[in-house]
Image (tube, rainbow, N blue to C red; front, top):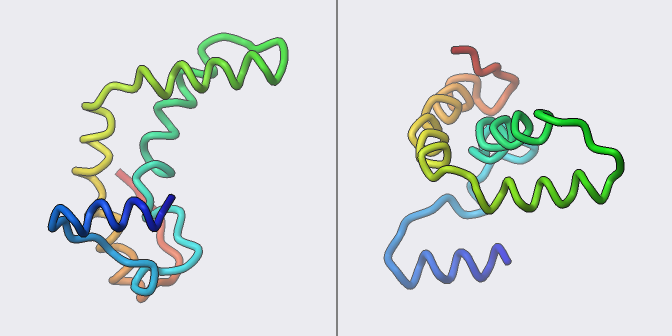
Length: 97
């Protein structure tokens, strides 16, 4: 999937950070991890789930209903953790707002 996405971006002249330049073990550098999952978690925890299947179904539904403004906000906020990572030379950093 990653290769397919990279090919799609390259074909459209869209720049991206390749795996060879991406810091390893950096979940905070992924907008999905630090922003979008938080939004999905809030939706999923709004009501209790009786079993794993119920949780999975709710996650699938929430993912299809995610507001693109949430995704855009995550992308717009992305430079902040990137700068923190660079300033700490890839070492530990925390995102505080």
